[in-house]
Image (cartoon, rainbow, N blue to C red; front, top):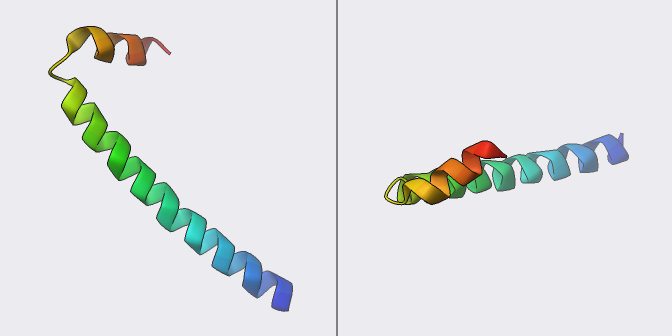
Length: 45
């Protein structure tokens, strides 16, 4: 039970980090809209 609780805490922490990363990526994507050549390269991956 203790292990499951610790896993749950770690997963929730990872979820928060993941959400922050997604927000940062969204912000970067908004910024790169001004540079079409960089945006097209990212879409190609």
